[in-house]
Amino acid sequence: MTRLIGIYGASGFGREVMPIARDRYAHDDARFVFIDDDPTQAVDRANGHDILTWETFLEAGPAAGVAVAIADAPVRRMLMDRCVAAGVPICEIRASNVTVGDDVQIGEGAILQPFSSITSNIRIGRGFHANIYSYVAHDCVIGDFVTLAPGVKCNGNVNIHDFAYIGTGAILRQGTGEKPLVIGAGAVVGMGAVVTKDVAPGATVIGNPARLLEKK
Ligand code: UDP
Image (cartoon, rainbow, N blue to C red; front, top):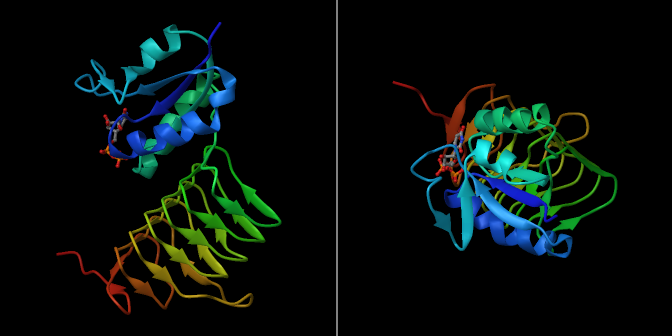
């Protein structure tokens, strides 16, 4: 019986991830579908693939795996936990031209988009997203559900804590073994920011050099 591979999220990011997943798992003779909880999405097809609700996905046949392709990190965690609770395996999506160096550990459910690079001696938690053309350099430690938007330059010895979001084209200055640059949990780095100093948990920083965005 054909097994299903589900891409959770039929919106922009999910539609980018689908062809990478197809390429990665082509040999498995799988049926590739989107899963989406929005009833206005889950009535149609996208790019030739059915869009199923979670319930219809579970009924449609045995699941080979699901990748949660949704940028919102708390939603990502909730949906990955849903898969685990239902006994549905979570799969990694890694584009064929991604480079990964030596001594790298990456937690479950990572999505590594084309032209992204993870160099060497790096630890990464669950539900990581590295968008197109983003890189993580040596000795970085990255928590759970961290998102790198396209073109993020994360230089060596940077620690990024859980749920942080790094915007498109941001540059994170290299830290040192004694004093890594730290991006706190849930912090947001705005697009194009050049981060030269630690960012506090929950803070949003923008600009070059990056400064705190005061919330009004
Ligand atoms: N979504 C879902 N279940 C949820 C939350 C979101 O299926 O619990 C879907 C939502 O309907 C939408 C997609 O995830 O189709 C998220 O798309 P969005 O454009 O917000 O973000 P992106 O594609 O950039 O991650």
